[in-house]
Image (cartoon, one colour):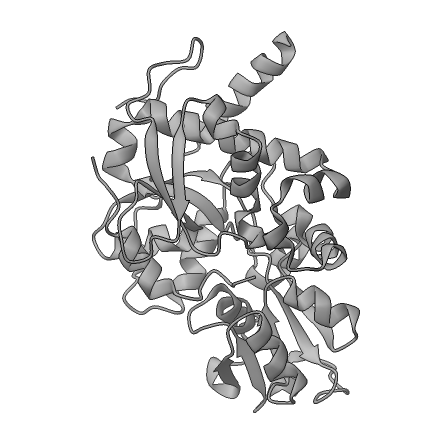
Length: 343
Protein backbone atom coordinates (compact mmCIF):
# COMPACT_ATOMS: atom_id res chain seq x y z
CA UNK A 1 0.00 0.00 0.00
CA UNK A 2 1.16 3.51 -0.73
CA UNK A 3 1.82 6.11 1.93
CA UNK A 4 -0.47 9.01 1.04
CA UNK A 5 2.46 11.34 0.39
CA UNK A 6 3.78 9.26 -2.51
CA UNK A 7 2.90 11.88 -5.13
CA UNK A 8 1.80 14.77 -2.97
CA UNK A 9 2.73 17.50 -5.45
CA UNK A 10 0.98 15.83 -8.35
CA UNK A 11 -2.11 15.10 -6.32
CA UNK A 12 -2.28 18.64 -4.95
CA UNK A 13 -2.00 19.89 -8.50
CA UNK A 14 -4.85 17.64 -9.52
CA UNK A 15 -6.93 18.71 -6.55
CA UNK A 16 -6.49 22.32 -7.55
CA UNK A 17 -8.32 21.49 -10.78
CA UNK A 18 -11.44 20.27 -8.98
CA UNK A 19 -14.71 21.36 -10.53
CA UNK A 20 -16.02 24.40 -8.70
CA UNK A 21 -19.30 24.36 -10.23
CA UNK A 22 -25.99 27.24 0.52
CA UNK A 23 -27.19 25.85 3.03
CA UNK A 24 -26.81 22.42 4.57
CA UNK A 25 -29.83 20.31 3.61
CA UNK A 26 -32.15 18.72 6.12
CA UNK A 27 -32.71 14.99 5.92
CA UNK A 28 -36.22 13.70 5.75
CA UNK A 29 -37.60 12.81 2.38
CA UNK A 30 -34.58 12.47 0.12
CA UNK A 31 -34.01 15.89 -1.49
CA UNK A 32 -33.28 16.35 -5.16
CA UNK A 33 -29.58 15.97 -5.90
CA UNK A 34 -27.91 18.85 -7.73
CA UNK A 35 -25.56 16.36 -9.41
CA UNK A 36 -25.99 12.60 -9.68
CA UNK A 37 -22.85 11.83 -11.69
CA UNK A 38 -19.56 12.68 -10.03
CA UNK A 39 -15.87 12.09 -10.55
CA UNK A 40 -13.89 11.27 -7.42
CA UNK A 41 -10.08 11.38 -7.39
CA UNK A 42 -8.20 9.01 -5.10
CA UNK A 43 -4.48 8.31 -4.71
CA UNK A 44 -3.95 4.64 -3.91
CA UNK A 45 -7.39 3.22 -4.46
CA UNK A 46 -6.45 -0.19 -3.05
CA UNK A 47 -4.69 1.27 0.01
CA UNK A 48 -6.04 0.76 3.52
CA UNK A 49 -6.70 4.48 3.92
CA UNK A 50 -9.19 4.14 1.04
CA UNK A 51 -10.94 1.13 2.60
CA UNK A 52 -14.06 3.05 3.75
CA UNK A 53 -14.48 4.39 0.21
CA UNK A 54 -14.04 0.87 -1.19
CA UNK A 55 -16.65 -0.55 1.19
CA UNK A 56 -19.20 2.16 0.38
CA UNK A 57 -18.66 1.54 -3.33
CA UNK A 58 -18.69 -2.28 -3.20
CA UNK A 59 -21.82 -2.43 -1.02
CA UNK A 60 -23.72 -0.08 -3.33
CA UNK A 61 -24.15 2.69 -0.79
CA UNK A 62 -23.51 5.45 -3.33
CA UNK A 63 -26.09 4.02 -5.72
CA UNK A 64 -28.55 3.76 -2.84
CA UNK A 65 -28.24 7.53 -2.39
CA UNK A 66 -28.84 8.17 -6.09
CA UNK A 67 -25.20 8.75 -7.01
CA UNK A 68 -23.14 7.43 -9.89
CA UNK A 69 -19.42 7.78 -9.18
CA UNK A 70 -16.44 7.49 -11.47
CA UNK A 71 -13.53 6.78 -9.14
CA UNK A 72 -9.98 7.04 -10.42
CA UNK A 73 -6.51 8.46 -9.85
CA UNK A 74 -7.10 11.79 -11.54
CA UNK A 75 -3.76 13.22 -10.41
CA UNK A 76 -3.31 15.36 -13.50
CA UNK A 77 -6.93 15.96 -14.38
CA UNK A 78 -10.04 17.30 -12.75
CA UNK A 79 -12.60 15.85 -10.37
CA UNK A 80 -15.58 16.96 -8.33
CA UNK A 81 -14.36 15.42 -5.07
CA UNK A 82 -11.04 14.12 -3.72
CA UNK A 83 -10.31 11.31 -1.31
CA UNK A 84 -7.03 12.36 0.27
CA UNK A 85 -5.25 13.50 3.45
CA UNK A 86 -6.80 16.42 5.32
CA UNK A 87 -3.40 18.14 5.41
CA UNK A 88 -3.77 18.75 1.67
CA UNK A 89 -6.80 20.96 2.35
CA UNK A 90 -4.72 23.18 4.63
CA UNK A 91 -1.86 23.29 2.13
CA UNK A 92 -4.25 24.32 -0.65
CA UNK A 93 -5.68 27.12 1.51
CA UNK A 94 -2.16 28.40 2.13
CA UNK A 95 -1.95 28.78 -1.65
CA UNK A 96 -5.15 30.78 -1.81
CA UNK A 97 -7.40 27.89 -2.86
CA UNK A 98 -10.54 27.16 -0.85
CA UNK A 99 -11.36 23.51 -0.22
CA UNK A 100 -13.38 21.86 2.51
CA UNK A 101 -13.27 18.38 4.08
CA UNK A 102 -16.76 17.07 4.83
CA UNK A 103 -16.34 13.45 5.97
CA UNK A 104 -13.32 11.90 7.69
CA UNK A 105 -12.27 8.34 6.79
CA UNK A 106 -9.15 8.00 8.95
CA UNK A 107 -8.83 9.49 12.43
CA UNK A 108 -5.07 8.79 12.42
CA UNK A 109 -2.41 8.34 9.70
CA UNK A 110 -2.05 4.55 10.21
CA UNK A 111 1.71 4.82 9.66
CA UNK A 112 4.21 3.00 11.88
CA UNK A 113 7.96 3.34 12.38
CA UNK A 114 10.17 0.34 12.95
CA UNK A 115 13.84 -0.14 13.78
CA UNK A 116 15.71 -2.60 11.53
CA UNK A 117 16.73 -5.48 13.77
CA UNK A 118 19.49 -6.36 11.28
CA UNK A 119 21.38 -3.06 11.31
CA UNK A 120 20.36 -1.64 14.69
CA UNK A 121 19.88 -4.62 17.02
CA UNK A 122 20.79 -2.75 20.20
CA UNK A 123 18.37 0.17 19.79
CA UNK A 124 17.16 1.63 23.09
CA UNK A 125 15.90 5.14 22.31
CA UNK A 126 15.53 7.59 19.39
CA UNK A 127 18.95 8.99 20.32
CA UNK A 128 20.40 5.79 18.88
CA UNK A 129 19.23 7.00 15.46
CA UNK A 130 21.81 9.80 15.41
CA UNK A 131 23.52 9.67 12.01
CA UNK A 132 21.38 6.71 10.91
CA UNK A 133 19.29 6.15 7.77
CA UNK A 134 15.49 6.28 7.94
CA UNK A 135 13.39 5.09 5.01
CA UNK A 136 10.26 7.03 4.06
CA UNK A 137 8.00 6.72 1.03
CA UNK A 138 8.67 10.28 -0.17
CA UNK A 139 9.68 13.72 1.16
CA UNK A 140 6.85 15.49 3.03
CA UNK A 141 4.82 12.28 3.11
CA UNK A 142 2.89 11.25 6.20
CA UNK A 143 5.65 8.75 6.95
CA UNK A 144 8.18 11.58 6.83
CA UNK A 145 6.04 13.56 9.28
CA UNK A 146 5.74 10.62 11.67
CA UNK A 147 9.50 10.02 11.68
CA UNK A 148 10.28 13.71 12.13
CA UNK A 149 7.82 13.96 15.01
CA UNK A 150 9.49 11.00 16.74
CA UNK A 151 12.83 12.81 16.45
CA UNK A 152 11.39 16.11 17.66
CA UNK A 153 9.93 14.52 20.78
CA UNK A 154 13.43 13.16 21.52
CA UNK A 155 14.93 16.67 21.15
CA UNK A 156 16.53 15.74 17.84
CA UNK A 157 16.45 17.58 14.51
CA UNK A 158 15.76 16.25 11.02
CA UNK A 159 19.39 16.93 10.17
CA UNK A 160 20.51 14.44 12.81
CA UNK A 161 19.54 11.57 10.50
CA UNK A 162 19.46 10.79 6.77
CA UNK A 163 16.02 10.39 5.22
CA UNK A 164 15.92 8.10 2.20
CA UNK A 165 12.91 7.98 -0.14
CA UNK A 166 12.25 4.28 -0.79
CA UNK A 167 8.61 4.31 -1.84
CA UNK A 168 6.23 1.70 -0.52
CA UNK A 169 5.66 -1.94 -1.20
CA UNK A 170 8.49 -3.88 -2.82
CA UNK A 171 10.85 -0.89 -2.86
CA UNK A 172 10.61 -0.32 0.86
CA UNK A 173 10.97 -4.01 1.63
CA UNK A 174 14.05 -4.36 -0.57
CA UNK A 175 15.73 -1.29 0.93
CA UNK A 176 15.32 -2.54 4.49
CA UNK A 177 16.24 -6.15 3.78
CA UNK A 178 19.39 -5.19 1.87
CA UNK A 179 20.71 -3.30 4.90
CA UNK A 180 20.34 0.16 3.33
CA UNK A 181 18.15 1.34 6.21
CA UNK A 182 18.38 1.49 9.97
CA UNK A 183 14.70 2.31 10.35
CA UNK A 184 11.59 2.45 8.17
CA UNK A 185 8.48 4.59 8.52
CA UNK A 186 5.80 3.26 6.22
CA UNK A 187 2.25 1.99 5.83
CA UNK A 188 0.66 -1.44 5.87
CA UNK A 189 0.86 -4.18 4.83
CA UNK A 190 4.62 -3.52 4.57
CA UNK A 191 5.09 -2.82 8.26
CA UNK A 192 2.92 -5.70 9.47
CA UNK A 193 4.82 -8.09 7.20
CA UNK A 194 8.20 -6.95 8.51
CA UNK A 195 6.98 -7.00 12.09
CA UNK A 196 5.63 -10.55 11.74
CA UNK A 197 8.98 -11.74 10.41
CA UNK A 198 10.93 -10.01 13.17
CA UNK A 199 12.72 -7.72 10.72
CA UNK A 200 11.60 -4.52 12.44
CA UNK A 201 10.76 -3.51 15.98
CA UNK A 202 7.95 -0.96 16.08
CA UNK A 203 8.82 2.16 18.09
CA UNK A 204 6.05 4.53 16.94
CA UNK A 205 2.59 3.53 15.81
CA UNK A 206 -0.11 5.84 14.49
CA UNK A 207 -2.32 2.87 13.69
CA UNK A 208 -3.74 3.37 17.18
CA UNK A 209 -5.14 6.49 18.82
CA UNK A 210 -2.80 6.12 21.81
CA UNK A 211 0.21 5.82 19.52
CA UNK A 212 -0.92 8.82 17.50
CA UNK A 213 -1.19 10.93 20.63
CA UNK A 214 2.32 9.87 21.66
CA UNK A 215 3.79 10.79 18.27
CA UNK A 216 1.96 14.04 17.53
CA UNK A 217 0.77 15.24 20.93
CA UNK A 218 -2.84 15.34 19.73
CA UNK A 219 -5.30 13.75 17.30
CA UNK A 220 -4.00 13.64 13.72
CA UNK A 221 -6.90 13.00 11.33
CA UNK A 222 -5.83 11.81 7.93
CA UNK A 223 -7.87 10.77 4.91
CA UNK A 224 -11.18 12.40 4.18
CA UNK A 225 -13.42 13.43 1.30
CA UNK A 226 -13.00 17.06 0.33
CA UNK A 227 -14.07 19.39 -2.44
CA UNK A 228 -13.85 23.00 -3.50
CA UNK A 229 -15.79 25.16 -1.03
CA UNK A 230 -17.85 26.57 -3.90
CA UNK A 231 -18.79 23.04 -4.98
CA UNK A 232 -19.92 22.20 -1.45
CA UNK A 233 -22.01 25.38 -1.24
CA UNK A 234 -23.66 24.85 -4.62
CA UNK A 235 -24.28 21.11 -4.21
CA UNK A 236 -25.27 20.55 -0.58
CA UNK A 237 -27.71 17.71 -1.29
CA UNK A 238 -25.15 15.88 -3.38
CA UNK A 239 -22.48 16.31 -0.72
CA UNK A 240 -24.95 15.10 1.91
CA UNK A 241 -25.70 11.98 -0.14
CA UNK A 242 -21.97 11.29 -0.47
CA UNK A 243 -21.56 11.66 3.27
CA UNK A 244 -24.46 9.34 4.10
CA UNK A 245 -22.94 6.66 1.87
CA UNK A 246 -19.52 7.07 3.46
CA UNK A 247 -20.83 7.04 7.03
CA UNK A 248 -22.74 3.84 6.22
CA UNK A 249 -19.44 2.34 5.06
CA UNK A 250 -17.68 3.48 8.23
CA UNK A 251 -20.41 2.00 10.42
CA UNK A 252 -20.22 -1.29 8.52
CA UNK A 253 -16.48 -1.49 9.16
CA UNK A 254 -16.96 -1.08 12.91
CA UNK A 255 -18.61 -4.49 13.20
CA UNK A 256 -17.24 -6.34 10.15
CA UNK A 257 -15.44 -9.61 10.75
CA UNK A 258 -12.57 -11.11 8.74
CA UNK A 259 -14.94 -13.12 6.58
CA UNK A 260 -16.98 -10.02 5.78
CA UNK A 261 -13.89 -8.09 4.70
CA UNK A 262 -12.64 -10.87 2.43
CA UNK A 263 -16.03 -11.14 0.71
CA UNK A 264 -16.28 -7.42 -0.02
CA UNK A 265 -12.75 -6.19 -0.79
CA UNK A 266 -11.71 -6.87 -4.42
CA UNK A 267 -9.31 -9.80 -4.71
CA UNK A 268 -6.67 -7.60 -6.37
CA UNK A 269 -6.50 -5.45 -3.23
CA UNK A 270 -5.50 -8.43 -1.07
CA UNK A 271 -2.04 -8.63 -2.68
CA UNK A 272 -2.24 -12.40 -2.93
CA UNK A 273 -2.03 -12.84 0.86
CA UNK A 274 -5.38 -12.78 2.63
CA UNK A 275 -3.89 -13.56 6.02
CA UNK A 276 -1.48 -10.64 5.82
CA UNK A 277 -4.25 -8.29 4.64
CA UNK A 278 -6.45 -9.25 7.58
CA UNK A 279 -3.56 -8.99 10.04
CA UNK A 280 -2.84 -5.50 8.75
CA UNK A 281 -6.51 -4.55 8.98
CA UNK A 282 -6.65 -5.67 12.60
CA UNK A 283 -3.55 -3.58 13.39
CA UNK A 284 -5.06 -0.38 12.01
CA UNK A 285 -8.76 -0.91 12.63
CA UNK A 286 -8.77 1.75 15.35
CA UNK A 287 -7.49 4.31 12.83
CA UNK A 288 -10.76 4.13 10.87
CA UNK A 289 -13.25 6.83 11.82
CA UNK A 290 -16.45 5.40 13.32
CA UNK A 291 -18.67 8.29 12.25
CA UNK A 292 -16.94 10.59 9.74
CA UNK A 293 -16.56 13.44 12.22
CA UNK A 294 -13.46 15.62 12.44
CA UNK A 295 -12.06 15.41 16.02
CA UNK A 296 -12.12 18.74 17.86
CA UNK A 297 -8.36 19.24 18.22
CA UNK A 298 -7.45 17.44 15.02
CA UNK A 299 -7.17 20.43 12.66
CA UNK A 300 -4.85 22.30 15.04
CA UNK A 301 -2.57 19.28 15.38
CA UNK A 302 -2.38 18.82 11.60
CA UNK A 303 -1.63 22.52 11.06
CA UNK A 304 1.14 22.48 13.67
CA UNK A 305 2.74 19.39 12.15
CA UNK A 306 2.69 20.44 8.50
CA UNK A 307 3.81 23.98 9.31
CA UNK A 308 7.02 22.38 10.53
CA UNK A 309 7.57 20.97 7.04
CA UNK A 310 6.51 23.82 4.82
CA UNK A 311 7.78 27.32 5.60
CA UNK A 312 5.16 28.74 3.22
CA UNK A 313 2.42 27.66 5.63
CA UNK A 314 1.98 30.37 8.22
CA UNK A 315 -0.39 29.11 10.93
CA UNK A 316 -1.63 32.59 11.76
CA UNK A 317 -2.84 32.99 8.18
CA UNK A 318 -4.82 29.73 8.05
CA UNK A 319 -8.56 29.81 8.77
CA UNK A 320 -9.03 26.29 10.10
CA UNK A 321 -12.78 26.72 10.42
CA UNK A 322 -13.01 26.99 6.65
CA UNK A 323 -11.03 23.81 5.97
CA UNK A 324 -13.67 21.38 7.22
CA UNK A 325 -17.27 21.00 8.32
CA UNK A 326 -18.89 18.39 10.57
CA UNK A 327 -22.44 19.34 9.61
CA UNK A 328 -22.84 16.75 6.86
CA UNK A 329 -21.48 13.90 9.00
CA UNK A 330 -23.69 14.90 11.95
CA UNK A 331 -26.76 14.89 9.75
CA UNK A 332 -25.75 11.60 8.18
CA UNK A 333 -25.44 9.98 11.64
CA UNK A 334 -28.87 11.26 12.63
CA UNK A 335 -30.40 10.17 9.33
CA UNK A 336 -28.95 6.66 9.53
CA UNK A 337 -30.08 6.30 13.14
CA UNK A 338 -33.64 7.16 12.16
CA UNK A 339 -33.46 4.87 9.15
CA UNK A 340 -32.22 1.89 11.18
CA UNK A 341 -34.86 2.48 13.85
CA UNK A 342 -37.61 2.37 11.25
CA UNK A 343 -36.46 -0.93 9.72
